[in-house]
Picture 1 (cartoon, rainbow, N blue to C red):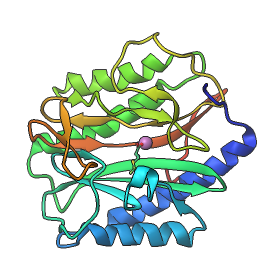
Picture 2 (picture 1 turned 180 degrees about the horizontal axis):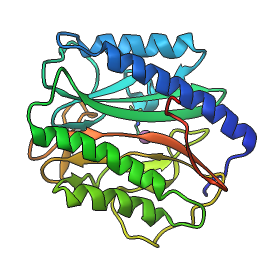
Picture 3 (picture 1 turned 135 degrees about the vertical axis):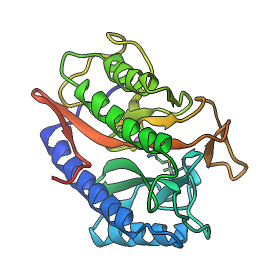
Picture 4 (picture 1 turned 60 degrees about the horizontal axis):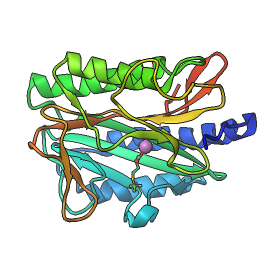
Length: 250
Ligand code: MF3
Ligand code: CO
């Protein structure tokens, strides 16, 4: 069942989204070469709690931290630890917060200091652009497949591949609600997009092949061919006029 949100739900989701956006911006600034990834987790948790919110990830199916830090060939769900950020690392940060029973979820990717090469820089640019193409296709009267197709076609036009095994999702009282939001698919297919729908749209895009595997820690997803991977995500609310991005600072 797909739950449509009320105006009151939307207001709470706006607050959760704002916390996620603010804390991600702080983490982005804090992430420098030499820093251990668990220091980022400590900042994430403190800044979420300071805003009267709760980390959405900590304890979720046993996940041990408040933020996911996925570096280079890591796609998603990297666990913060003693590892230190290095110049030219491609870092993806994924963060979730709960306010008044509603969840906000977003992710960003960026380089420490500077990209290692132009193709890596292109991967990050195109992955972010594909998120915005997906959001543009999130419109009343459209179909879910319009979003999937918009993301996939831009990424593949640049020679990148979209991850198949992990997808975006409905979001609200729970972090993961129906429907699933794949980053691949056909326009005109899937459920009707209606006002009141809230989705986390999150392209995960690899420089090489789309295949991924999970490391023995049970969480960290990596590209099978070792190629770089980027991830951007926004929580987005649909009303009669179009999409509102809840996890973006104005
Ligand atoms: N943002 C991720 C998602 O949308 C959530 C991280 S999984 C967790 O699936 F277990 F770390 F919470
Ligand atoms: Co998500």
